[in-house]
Length: 123
Image (cartoon, rainbow, N blue to C red):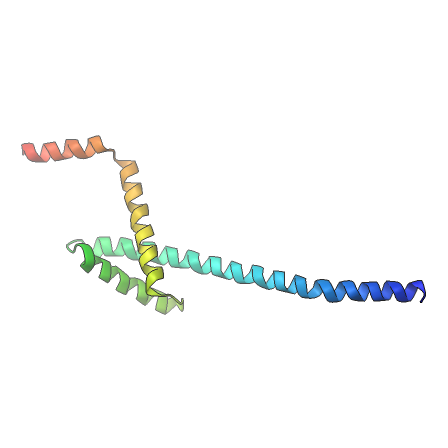
């Protein structure tokens, strides 16, 4: 066996070993990238849905408002062709509501609420 044949067999071995590995890694990366984009799209639609429910159904409370938000979000997911299940939507709604409340409480501290409450009682 001369060196040329040895180098040829070594290159063939390397190519047949690393091409499938490279293909699997690339496929995994692309799949994850698509998944991340889908999750971001879901989060964005859910945040819009929660804001919509807060604005449009200001007179509703609790489960009624929650169900209206779920209906709107599910319609948006369906229109966008995004697959979802109920647990995903509920979890994303809870996260969006928490995010809204967190933003609200960072704008106002407890003293502001107490002062407003006392002013309301005085009137």
